Image 1: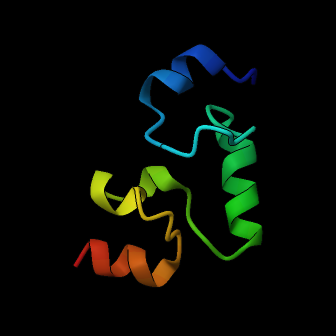
Image 2: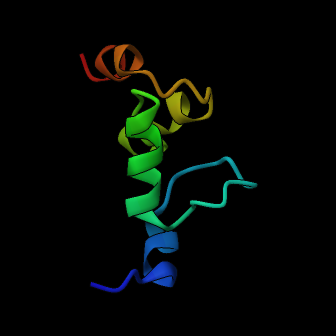
Length: 63
């Protein structure tokens, strides 16, 4: 399956502009998984801006 970068970027909520993985969801998920984190799109808009991608923060954000 091909990555549709334009479509992905239309709903990507990541605010980290210099990220080379923006819109490349498979690369983004793999990168954050390796670091035991979640991608920014899993978080609320306010929490995403903190760049805290920890699983602990995800649970706090969703409880």
